[in-house]
Length: 93
Image (cartoon, rainbow, N blue to C red; front, side, top):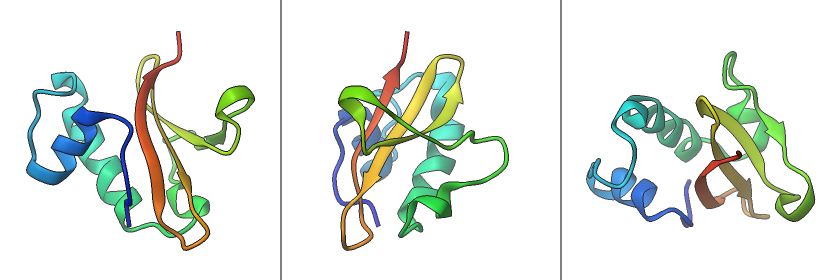
């Protein structure tokens, strides 16, 4: 279950299917990622072919990322209760 978001556009897409806060060419992929993350209770639940699940380092240590499109990454971490937290969408370049 997703507990909280850092990215307001992702929260609006998840809560209300409001697409204006994210890039239109990413909407379909983001909907799929949000549904998968909502059904996940551990990191390995997000390890699907093509997503390139990987841990982050540095100031994002503890977060995991999956590919969205181009330089865009969907990042998240899990709390001790198995809830996804701090869900964000970042351009890593």
